[in-house]
Length: 255
Image (cartoon, rainbow, N blue to C red):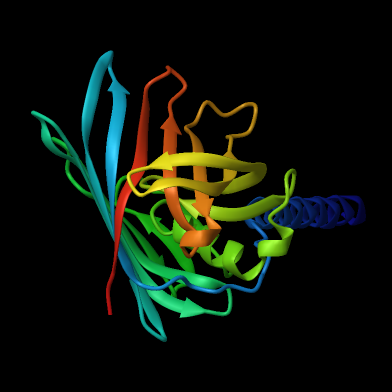
């Protein structure tokens, strides 16, 4: 009887240890530390872009509009992409509050042509990120971004840390998309001259590449220090070679 009792207790202890180990593993998987850095939000503005793209073998041209606005405690970003002959092909929006990390999104919406919109919610009461396009959830730990707001969070970080935006420096963020979220790492490539409708301007080239085992989209952003660090050029490149490139045409300041 004693031997049986010992075996039961030993089995229970091992089960408890396994449960604790699994819980610890899940907690480790859930961690996504985000560096807390100084931020300096740029002035609210409307930015118009010319777009060139290659999608499914087709060469496309179009226009893009980005509306960036913020007050003391909140922000919003909306984007709209139009292609000749096709009309509106992509709309996104990000809105939320401003906290110690910078942008603190509450909701991210993406609407692609001929598809239903997807909504990503940053639930501050439940401390988790949820998606209408998947059952995934991620914990909110501070500093998380979405795929539309991240450009403006990067701008705000660059403005406040200009002296550190040197070639080779890396800037890490945790970014949520329509279905899931992952760590994004941006690396400063260097300074380059960019031709825009407003003339040639010097910009800081920042590159985001997915991890080696991830066949995700690459993102190049060129930020212009002489123009409030606004993005004067962006290029999204898919694994199959398709791309969307947008170059700044004009900037209109808003109140």
